[in-house]
Image (cartoon, rainbow, N blue to C red; front, side):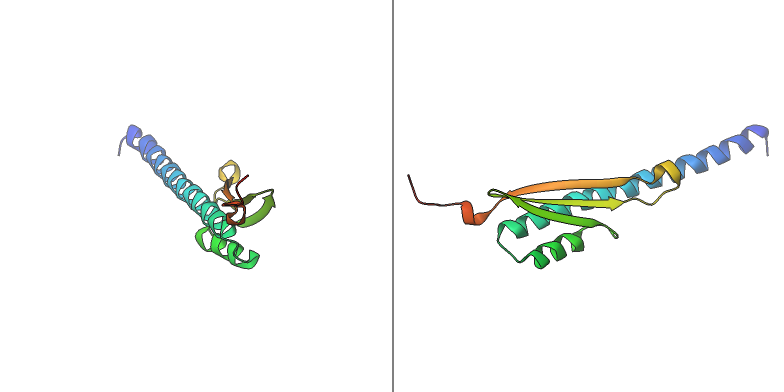
Length: 110
């Protein structure tokens, strides 16, 4: 084994691990977005709060925190999930979705 090979192999191993971490973080971010959207849709249909939170948690990554609230005719659902990783690679991913409450649609004509 040459000196160049002894230097390149650890660099390739570190690059591969960084790439795998980035792919896992991207997949968890997509799951956060999907969970927020699913929760907002459920809230807009006037489902009970526990059902909305369960719907969002089922779609979210493990260990995610889900919050929901209503402001006027809009429901907001926010999902935050920590990523696994050492030191600075441990991030908190988040996504928020907003949906118009169905009980505000189709009101009386002016």
